[in-house]
Length: 124
Image 1: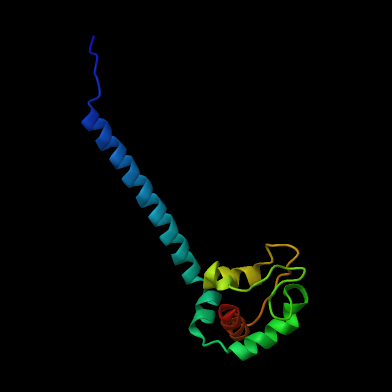
Image 2: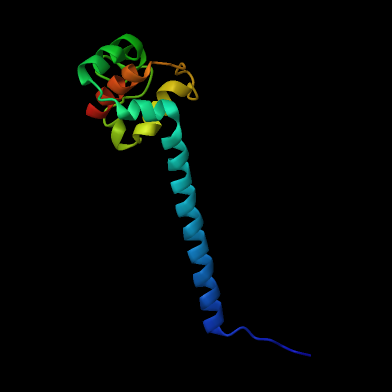
């Protein structure tokens, strides 16, 4: 009968390889998501345009202030002050256009309007 005992060095090597594999999978997952996001034609178009913060504020006042407050400081919806510190540009665009966070409606601005709105949101 062959009683094989795993040496501590072998266990350490196996753990190191497992940790490296997990790290690689996480890195590839994040990189892959960013690649998919960056390849979206709408997002690419928005990101390529210079946004006008003043126009973005006007768009916000018309479409968003009813819930997020005139100065984006929250009412029915949450405050958006500092939102760009918590969400990426893609995350902000997705939040606006997806309608996946009820009761926020799905909003479909054209690419220039979205670039302007994004510029305003990033200024908060």
